[in-house]
Image (cartoon, rainbow, N blue to C red):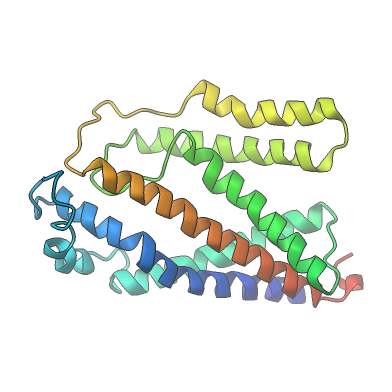
Length: 237
C-alpha cells in the first residue's frame, strides 16, 4: 500500500520538477542572470537602456554553480528534489484530510485545487509582504526571513483549512484573520534599501516567479490527483 502511494507521489513530483526547469529558463533565470551582471558590475547602471542587461554577465553566471554541475544541471536536480518533496507533502496532507481521488476528471480537479491551495500558502501569501528577490537586491537577515516565511506558510495553511473545510461562518472568518495576521505583524525589512539592480528587473522577477510556481503547483496537483486515482481505494484507506 505505502509503496504504491509513495510511487504515485514521486512520479508526480519528478515529472513536475522536470517540466519546471524549461519554464524557469524561459521566465526567471534570464532575469537572475541580468541581476547578477548588475551585481558584479559587469553592466553599466542605465535605467534608460533595457537592452544592455544580460550578455556581459552570461558567461560568469553559467560558471557559478552551487553543486558543481553547472547552472542547468543544478537547476534540474533542485527541481527534481523539490518536486518529489512537495508531492510527498501534498499527498500526505490529502490522505490525512481523508480526501479521495476517484478515477476520472474529478481526481484531476481535486488535485488542481490542492495544488492551487498549496501555491497560495507556499508562494503567494508570503510574497505579499516578502516578494521573491533577485541577486543584488537588498535582503533582510536570512534567519528572520526564514522564520517569518515558515510562520506565514503555516498560518496560511491553517486559514485555508478553516475556510475550505469548515462550514461555520465564524470559523471561516477566523481563517481569514489567521491568513492576514502575519502581514499585519509585518515581514523583516532590510536596513539598507539601496541596490545597483534596476527595479524593473526585480518586479519582473517577482511576477515571473509567481507565474512559474503557479504552473508548477497546478501541474503537480493535477498529476498527483491522476496518479493517486490509480491506487486502489482499499490501499488508501
